[in-house]
Figure 1: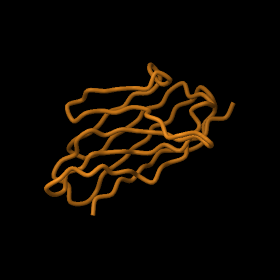
Figure 2: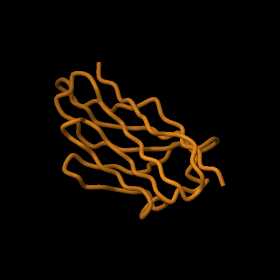
Figure 3: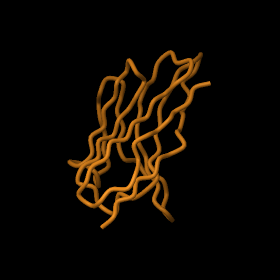
Figure 4: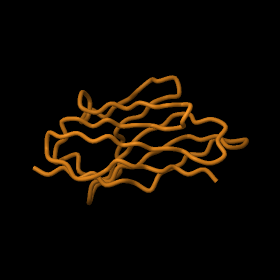
Length: 119
């Protein structure tokens, strides 16, 4: 069974940086698009950034210029470098990935990692 495991969340002051990682483990043939989403208390889950297998990226307007998504295809891992963090970035961050382990591509989610930015 394939799982996504996030790490790297925590508490940071405004203006600080954090780096999130998400590794897919299990019987994997290939990973397709990978990305990060976040959900703040009382709000809907929203897109933060995605990256295709070939490296094409997409960012939410609110994080452009501050966050950078990258991936290591050999390690089935996606990263999110977050700089110039703001209190509004406080949320649970979820990893998402398309993973092919058999005949089909499954849309998988991690359990989430908390990011808290203090003012």
